[in-house]
Image 1 (tube, rainbow, N blue to C red):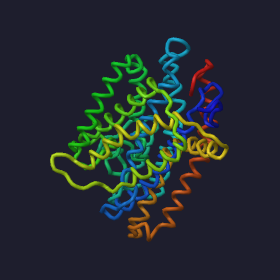
Image 2: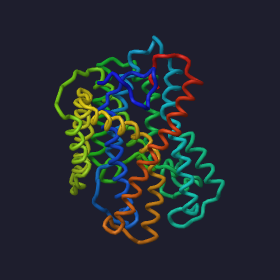
Image 3: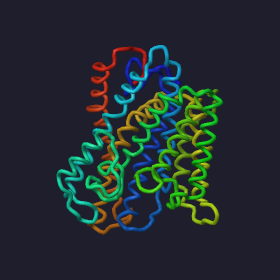
Image 4: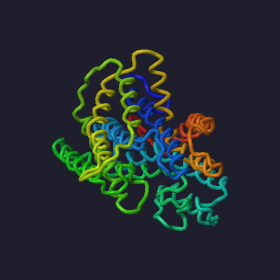
Length: 388
């Protein structure tokens, strides 16, 4: 762990685990590629091989979140931190990009003509309601007039906001309840939620054949999304409470390769009493991801180049996750309109949209997120010594 801090933090922040920040960026980059290939499946209405398990990045994010929040706040309760302070700090850290993602979402929706995927025109009033709800992170239910794209998404203007919805739930539970648990009680929570998540995935409760649930309020998605948050989040906390470094040289690059390999594994077909794909994803979430976090937290950057890479990846990870999907909607629409459904036919467009999202994430970070958070901190945070 380095003694210096990221450009995205402020003077009152604790030092960062730079390798964890770097891996968060790697996972965010993989999510964008996953959504690009998801577009070919969506447009062509048939499965397309790509980053097949990219949605597991969300589970990885939740483990990182639990670890980092426990590290940043566990020793401050009852000293310089109140629940009000905590909630203000988390809102300042997370919510500006929630708002920006919603704004990009409404812009791209209007650019596409303000219609659902089946061509149904959406009233401007419904679009404005969708924007207002998205900015306050209030989910839409399937079929509502303001569920404007018609996919059943919680947040039809910016689909990935669903994970922030559950992140907020995790933060609330942490402040009110989980932080008070003893190590034994926390271990019990991890065990129970892990068993529940494993059963959900292995027995394919959702019927999807994979764990990519939580993005809608339809069916068992809320339950699945909650399990996808509560297990990794509490596991991350447990890792921090029991953390003892285990040094492995080159762990950042090893972990990066492992994440790539896991996310690229083809969907595992076959189902008898259990879903083999669900079993694979359960192993990733319950065993492999926590191991990666533990080992990466044990390491540190050793040269300027690797330090710069991890800082950059960590800095853009959250903005990239929150701004990329509105432009995926445009990409999907282009594929549908041109009837080009393969990467070979559209690789130039796919590469352009990928680079555009990285550039946009950096611009948004530097000219909106950081300045806005700094202003909010100066206005609403009076105490020093706490992480934002």
